Image (cartoon, rainbow, N blue to C red; front, side, top):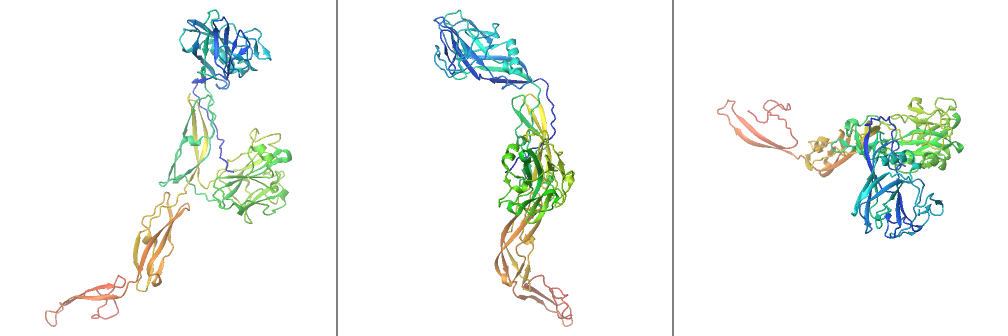
Length: 613
């Protein structure tokens, strides 16, 4: 199981005071009640006003304030917009008022026309706040007689808005005390015959919209995640700041914007630390649940592991010395950066951490005074604790607690106390889950130093300018092989002894790497007469981080052949005894460069020029 690293860095808040926000919400329940019957309209449209038959309708609306506005905010403005989509023949300039409801009411599934429909519990009706269970104190609903707001409807189909200081006060109260939020009742002019209106509801038509303006100075809740940055062909990796986010929350609502102290990474950020092996023990823990569970270890893959089965675990109980490998991993491949969890059992581990272990084995049924060994084959490559010492009262005891490896340490075949951070013994006593524990077991926070971990400060800012920061780590990796370039073809001659030695320079045609080459090599460098003709030679290139690539050059090996001397010109003496004669020759074949020996000054010294004077 691959776990995403979460860094719990210090959080600094720099809020902008009184940052302004706005939110639009629809009702979470609405209904209508009808004076002439116990009908309702829980799933239908809303009605208010007096009909042509002198019957009254009233609309009820409830909005989830606490679920829409952050607790602690200050409400600065409230407006309610309703859409009139039908009206009676007497509709004109009538005043419609909002009133705060004082008894909780219900919404069922009834849905019909302006006469309503048979109520379905828990529908509100003219007599019941909740059909069959809660009656209104006063028929027609319990509400504050003083209006929260009023608006005159002018007889035109369309949108109308209610807003007032009283509505601001009521919404603030509902935010601060959600239990007191029972919503509003809309009442029309119940003296004007045929003035009733039909409004859109949350279920049908254009839904009511409650617009709330508020101020909020609470910083976002920042959650960062670590990132592995892979360099490109030019040796650069660019990270989008949004990629550092791992679920940050806009406490005040709205959107979040992310910036980072560093977003561009190069070869310079790759570290020089080389681990002795690709797997390390990053945590040991002894939990407080039944049976002292969860018990187990967290391990971290420093590098890619082609076959995990080469590794195994063992425990040394009560200073009894090593028992060798007691648990072998299966033959699976593991990617660098993966966390592996091995526990003594699964149910309690899952209950405690919220995710299941990767493997379970009784060998991990350890107590907080036992040592843990990690093997590669039969060799101990990492260890927590002293296998030959009972850990009781030792500095490394973690009874009912945990120990976590410090980043950029390990693996080590002998225990190094300063490589670890410890909870105190019994730190987990009485706790039920890691998420709620006062001193939780760190999970997935170990960062190796093999590929450089660069600290990045991420700033999260909301729409109102409130901001907070969290720390993330970027692991910079070069996984690209060199760009290998071979000559297309070439002809090479054996020397006079029938031999030839090629160098990488003979085959290389401009090999490069994004972070730097470590070296070049050839599949074959020595050639003789047995290699005459066509030959394929492979050029291998390795960069400084161990990435390898190759190319093939098709070359021809030829024998240099015999030598020949051609007389070009003889210049005779002008007269016997003179010294103005010359001989010039041309030489070909063999293997240059040539040496010459004319016999007129002795033989065997090879110190003459090509042409004789």
